[in-house]
Length: 425
Image (cartoon, rainbow, N blue to C red):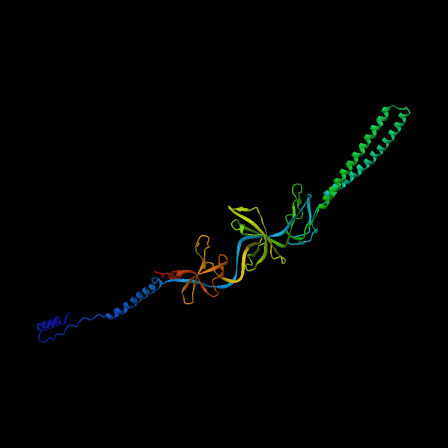
């Protein structure tokens, strides 16, 4: 209400009031404080402004692309064919039973070292010893028969002489002489038959004696017992196949049998350097030279794999059979040469017919400017490349270019993943 209206109301009240009554004007309504509202709204406004600035600084800015560079350094480099392999003994043999019978005793266990011709097992010889006894008795019988047949032969020879004299004196007929001759021939045949039976029996006796020797199994080579399929007391049947009693392997030298894909097998050459590392010792190398590439491949899941073999010494015995190995066949190697990441190498097409393509790198000068420079590349693998000519140690080369906003967005994404929305209830 304005001051003019208020004065008019006061005058009207005075005129209407009785003379003895004092009129008191009504108080003006209180005025609201606008400053208190501004202080309440200020924090909200500042929060909105701060959030907008943060969002603009983090997401709205689009800085220029940045270069990823690497320093040219000296290091060792090699180009190799990789494969997965398995360790085997360079030589192994199965010592088996050549005769049937019960395994009477086993003198070795898995892991024992044996020498050549060392007794490792025995088969019960009772059955073979009985056969030998029978053979000896049969041989003695035949020898006695031979003595008798020879005596008959002597008698028949004497009868021929006697009949010949009688025929000369016309005392007996010619037929009597002829019968005496026939009897002599028959007696001689009986002697030869007995002699043949004796030789046969002697051969049978010798065979049974050999079988008796087979009841003792000796180590055919020096090495380590790596398998023991047969157990003591087990009955062995050697009529069809020779059952294996123990397997002996020479572990002083191990053979690595690596599986090489058909795409890489053409890169291998007999005599090239090779090495491998074990699963439990990734930092240690065991070296050798490629000895053989087996001509018959193995096909698994339509993948053709060839086996490449090389040998490594095992004086301490730390290499064991069936170990898995990560194998590398070295095609080329160099030590203490200038290397750069392979990603820094750029190859252009042919400049002219018959002219080889040129290889270039982008070099960052100390001033920050870039320069494209042609280089000569030596050994190269998937990670690094040798620079033979065109760069100096300490120079920086461009590996790749990336936008900084991309890196910021990735960092922001990772930071936002760590944030949690506040609970609303």
